[in-house]
Image (tube, rainbow, N blue to C red; front, side, top):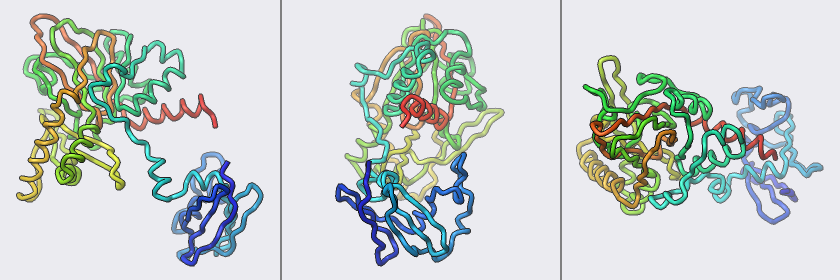
Length: 377
C-alpha cells in the first residue's frame, strides 16, 4: 500500500503529494480534476465520463486540500466540486519521467537464437485451458509472434482461430486467403518464388494488426518460413546510424496495391515510435512500395537509410527459419514481425497455406480479459 503522508499546494497551482517512503510527485489541477472518479463525474456502472471538458471552469484552481482517512487526498475546487484520490491510485498514475518509463510496455527483442525457445502451444490445449492460453498470449505480446500446433487441417480453420483470438477482418482478399502457386497471380505470394521478409498490406490504413498463416499441406521441398523481429532491426539501425533511423521514422513512403477490382494506397513511415522514442511499428514491403514523395535532397538520404535497413533485415543472425508442418499456424504482429519464405518447387509436391487478418486491439483485449479473470486484483 502507498501511504500518503503530506499534500502541499505549490505556488504554480500544482499539488505536491508525498508518500511514507519519502518520494514525492506533482499533479496539475486540470489533470486531477479530469480524473475525478466520483458519481457526478463518472457513470458508476461503466466508468465513462458524464461531462464535457468545456464544462470545467476555464480558470480551475484549488480552494482547499486535505488528507482524509484512507488516507486519501481530498480537493475542493474553485467551483465547489469535491474530489478524492487514494494514495495507491496517485502512486500508480504519477507523471514523473521515471514512473512513466516504468509503465511503458517494452518489447522483448529477439534474433535467431529464439529458435530454442519459441512461443509454441497446442491449439486444443489452449481451447481447454484459459491459463495456457494466457501464458501463450503473454509471450506472443512480448515477442510479437507465436506458433500454434495441432490446428485441424481443414479449410477455414484459420478463420476459426482468428475469431477466437480476435475478430477476422474481411479485406479485398476475402475473409481468408489461400497462399499457393497459381497461374497469372495478382500477388507474388501466389507464386513459388522466394519472398523477402516484409509486413503485409502497408497500402491499407490501418494495416492489419495481426496475420495468421495456417499450413494445410507441405509436401513441396522448400517454402521454409522466415521471421525477423523488425523492432530488433530498427534498434540496430538506431544504434548504428541515428540520422538514418530518424529519416525512416519521419519521412513516409507511399505504398500501393492495385488489380482489376482494387486500388489501395497509404502513406506510412517505415519505422514508427511514440514521443519517448519507444518503437511502435515497422512497415517494410519492397513489393508494395510505390514512390517517395519527398524533397530531392531528402529522398537521396532516405534511400541510403532504406538500403541500410534492408541490409540489416538480411542478416542471418536476425532471421528465424523454420518449416511449417500441416496443422501449424504462425501468428504474427504484422507491424513488428516481418515474414517471408524460401522458394519451393510446386512440381515436386503441394504447398498450401491459408491466412487471415485480425485487428491487434481485439487480441490485446482477449489477453487483458483473461489476465483480469485469472488474476483478479
